[in-house]
Image 1 (cartoon, one colour):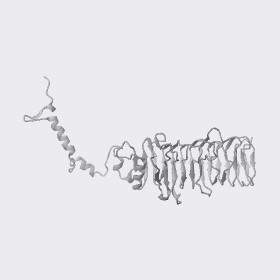
Image 2 (cartoon, rainbow, N blue to C red):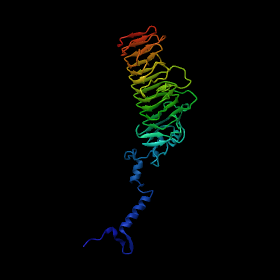
Image 3 (cartoon, helix red, strand yellow):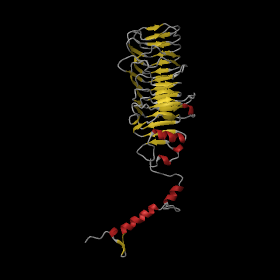
Image 4 (tube, helix red, strand yellow):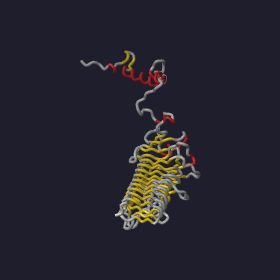
Length: 375
């Protein structure tokens, strides 16, 4: 004979509620009691009194932590109700609490309007393959960088982001003043736009670990120094406007650039002017692979050009037009004429250890040209 299910029995002979139903009701009442376990030496009261409250890792949602104690002051995740649906909303909130880093989950996140980016906001994605910022092809939305509002020590820029379909470019500095005291950072990003990354920036630029596809516009325009390293610049097109980095419009002073360990590849084996025909001051251009190089208009003032592979195209060549440059250990290939030339007026340069494969034209004065491979 099978035994009866105890939970299915009535509580008493006069109460038809089953034992199981009574237990479930008691548990519900307990769960609804806001004072449960709050008495002395009971669980919640002891939990609240502990100096260290131990939660399972990643069990506390972001908005339950003080803003200044969070790793990310805001998270963009449309699937989580406690986070922000859009980048615009996350920036607005982060600005209201004093700025900080914003984390953007994997997926495509659209800009529906131009977005002001204060210079104490740093936007971080999951990776430069999965976190995408985009807009429609014809919309032209972009980030408006306001460097007038910069605060000392602030971190501004992007990390681990894919930029796609931003036909108006990614960043334009709307500031009217001069406050280039901090860096604008672009770290481990992928630019699929074939458009400008930074239309204007009044801050110092740090760009590293990026892959950038560009065509007929300067990728970056800055008013101060730039440090560009470990990047791939690909798809450079035929126009001489196709440059990696150049000055903001209207800026006339010489600039200090450091350009190291990059690969720069032109499209369709055509000449390109990668540095925009501008003058560099005390710059270091080192250890880059540059294909279809054209430097006929570039002036490097007291700069170092060292350890580069320059594969020039057609009749182009590396032309030095300024003074006190240090040109060492470069390999220059391609072309049909003399590949390295010091123009008249390019004086007091040091040119050593380069593998040129042709004669070096030296039309300047007091230049040291020695120990180069010219045949």
